[in-house]
Length: 407
Image (cartoon, rainbow, N blue to C red):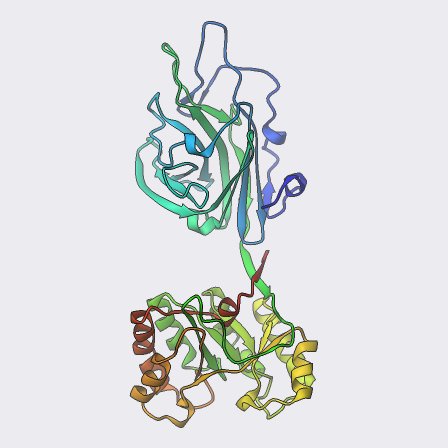
């Protein structure tokens, strides 16, 4: 989890607008109303705002929220889905409004279970009515008694790339009798503004020249792979994968990417992995073939592959070294559907559906008639899921990480 370093960077993925108050530092203690949230009162004058600072940034794929408080706070003391109109409600939340209008996204820490792994998301109408509440995966850290950080994927919290106004809100649930309300906000008088930028996968770790035929079996995962595309069959494969909500790896031919860039971009946009299968599909391709293929993939999708599969599975020591020199792993397989022989969709489904944990399954979405593979795919996925096996990308199977970068 990032610390002070990212807090000091200006605009690391989230653009600060001119209207934003610098670090929301309080110059004076002022009693006021903030769009339905009134600060409590006491006979001794307005209390000090317990919210000291609030910061947003984007790091990789994650949106990072840091809140600093004056009193010591514990995540367990807050409600994940608070009713902020109630005096007894204890909450620490961030609220986001898209500048073009719509519902407010209210993201709150706390809850009875998994407080460090989830936050609450409430969608709030302009009238203050909560229309939907759900739990969102996040990483929540109480880094000090006065500082809490939250990291989450913006899309999981209904925060697509857009311009937002936002603020932090807080209440400890200990409302004094006679107080107008017990909620505090930061900024106090207005909202800060940020632009959440779109983030693309631009590469992956693990390109160490290793030759791999299968992955670890401990996590009950398998990798479905497709060679020789993109082709006219690839959109059909992608639609099936989307329907079953699984991800796969496509070992593409560079010349086919150049001929059909839109499908290559769709592969990446839908969360699948794109990998190098040479430029013209020769036996034992030259290093220049690998370089050209990486180049056209990167130019088309922004993604630089870290995986290579040799055409026909033919590999010698020179080609393995070239793959490593281009910062790629060489990926073979341990389940071959021989779908290139068009043995029938039943045969293809039976072979692929019989894969075991850690298997890398070879299929094709290009290079010939692939209607049988398309027809077999729903049955393959269903069979694997019934057996408790989750289809993932090769990088996910091997424990490699995706590298994300804002546009």
